Image 1 (cartoon, rainbow, N blue to C red):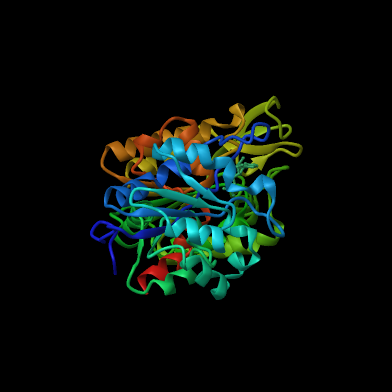
Image 2: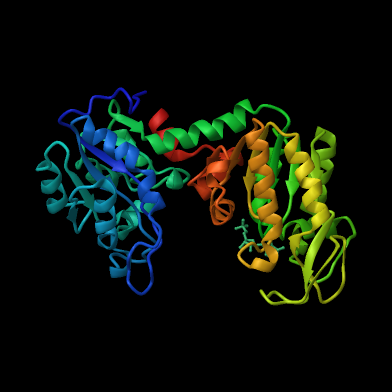
Length: 397
Ligand code: AMP
């Protein structure tokens, strides 16, 4: 397998699949957060410094049928240029004559961004013919789009077969995989997984797989109330998936059989309605009065979870402990972020798993106090569900 560190890029056109699916300001259509662009810079700069040229390939939003102005990658062009520090060419199509000619005319050190691959339905269909057309743009293929690695799309997966000896992962993908593998395959013990967020149904597969690898599983957020109800608790108007009660009971039984300790929040901050200015109080999580709902873990639960985390040597965190977007219900998630940071300072390896947990850690300004914050929400989740990521497999095969 090729490594981006040692591959000879001199005079080559590197087709780099990035995840530039960045949020735009709805009014100005300017990039609202360029984190994903910055994350791809080490790969881009390395290739340019090594004498190659770069063709950037990305998806952007979810266009339904063909090109849509609001999903054009031209909106992000100036931000890409600013980050790379040089002019970037643009082709209004990702396949066809213009893209092909522009890619062929690139000189060493030059960069071309081509239009959204999802303007073709063949992209998400994983169409081989479309992948072949895209492949003509480069002499080698670099996949640095970890955020899209769980999708078997043309530009993330099928395309790799057209570069049997010239395909590799980029630096972002490499570090994402290294930290994920460290946790999945080489976790120092005790290994604690924190799973939170709204729904049990979104997290069943990851919890089931974690039962095979973790020592402790902390369950917080909206999903914890279905677990409480499954054990006969009274949860008032808290989030609940009645069709998942049996699943929760099965998970609790399996955990016991496997010797995995499941920790549910002893108490909750409850509210009389789902609103930032709701009336609040603290109650045991299994005794939420009717008309009230649990929107955050409570003070005892924070101490309970903190105790487990400070004894852990490996921590995986996916999903917030409460409605952290509202100030009144952010304390649980914030306190857990502080505990994870403290454990990290004491030598634990902590991986924050994408999506909302990454957003929370960032919101509280703690991203640099944990070991690794993943850029891939869905991809990381699927990885810890035990699934093979097609984008990674296509490079490693
Ligand atoms: P997920 O995408 O499944 O990780 O869920 C994240 C969302 O769950 C966030 O938007 C939180 O506001 C929400 N959430 C967390 N805890 C609760 C709760 N107790 N009740 C309602 N929503 C919650």
